[in-house]
Image 1 (cartoon, one colour):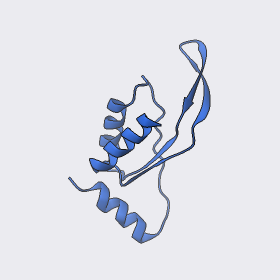
Image 2: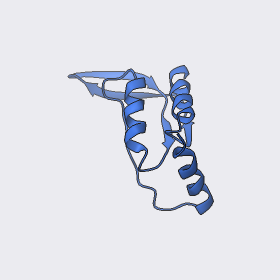
Image 3: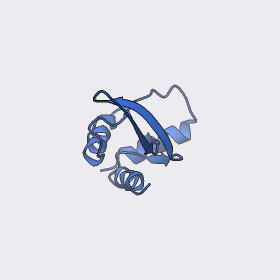
Image 4: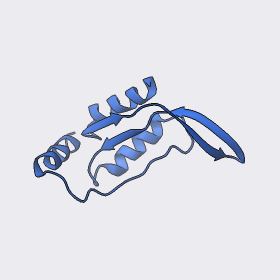
Length: 94
């Protein structure tokens, strides 16, 4: 949880994300380098803009200890105009 909180704080403080939600810890099972692995992981949802996504991903990769952390970029197809504008405003600050 400490690493997830650290990543969240940095991404928001550096205005690479407007908001970061930390989920509940859960066991992830996956194949890695030919072996079955299991690890407790905390999923995080990072809200940013399409323009900021590449910078946010680069920073996330620098902060994360995994060689290949799960990073998915999902399109936003709707939302309240007020919330979407808030995200844009937060993620566009320098």
